[in-house]
Structures are given as C-alpha cells and as structure tokens.
Length: 197
Image 1 (cartoon, rainbow, N blue to C red):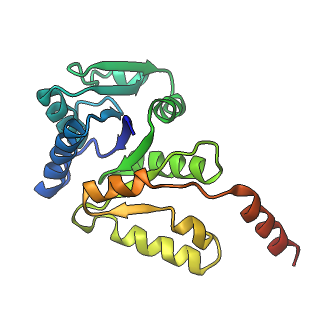
Image 2 (tube, rainbow, N blue to C red):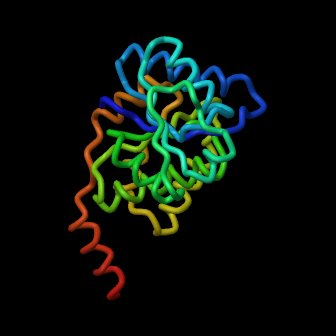
C-alpha cells in the first residue's frame, strides 16, 4: 500500500495517548514510505498527524469540502490539498486516492467515513482493506457491538472477520497487506435463500 487514508478526530481528545498515536502513525508512514491521505484539516489529531509527517519529509494529501475551506480550517502546510464541493465528494475522492483506510479515535465524521469505506469494500465496489487502530481500547465497545450484530444475524461471520482491528499499527498494517475481500455471489445467494424461508 502506497497511500493510506486515515480518518481521525478534528479534536484532540482528553488523553495524550491519542496524540501520541497520531504522531507514531506519521513516523511509521514515513519509515514505510506511505503517503498520508486525510481530511485536510489543521485541527486536532488530523493536524498532529499531518504536521509530524511533513516535519519528517513525508507526503501528505488533504481533501476538504469548499464550505470548510472557506472557514480557514484547511492545513496550508501539506503537500497537496484537493478542495471539493460536498462531503460526499470528499469521501469519493478519499476512496479513489487511497489503497487502504485506517480509523484512529474520532467522532461522527470519523465513524461516517470508516463505515462508508467498510460498506464499499463489503459490496466489492472497491477491494481495499479498512482497519481500526484501537488506541487505548477506544473501539472496544464497537468491537463488542460488531459481535452483537453478528449474533443477531445482521452481519455475516465472514464479513465480521474482515473487520480489521489492532492496538499496534505495525500489526494492523500487516493485516491490511494480507486482506482478501469476500466474494459477493455466495453471501448474496445465502441471503436470498434465508429471505425465502
């Protein structure tokens, strides 16, 4: 993977461990020669991540909708900034630019981007790995929720196994490199069969 889109908070969070995770991600990306693709903001974890990678001499590409750029929250010091019209266009371009996706701790925007990319991969609209860096157990409850949804019959077990999550970035990158998407024909046929009963 040459380019990875990272979704994370435009806030810092209350625990310094999240800031350290953002810095560490930038350092690992630099070492592995991975270009960072992100939302283009100069706020929160997004800024920490981009600043650190730029300090090291790495490449950072931002994608920001016009209405946010007008509020001057775009990061002026990155390699390249794409300005688009809408949030949907932002996600579409992030999907096109990146070879894979990682969610760090964040809020609604982070979750929105993560789930959209996960859904696109599940439906084989794209065949790209989508991972979660579970810093400080931030996503533990969401992992439990995924298990609950499987138990209730709304996510198939094979898809649950493709939800990549790790507390260590290097291990998560290995999981992403080894990712193989699920074939759609079988599970769609299984769903049709279940629905006819």
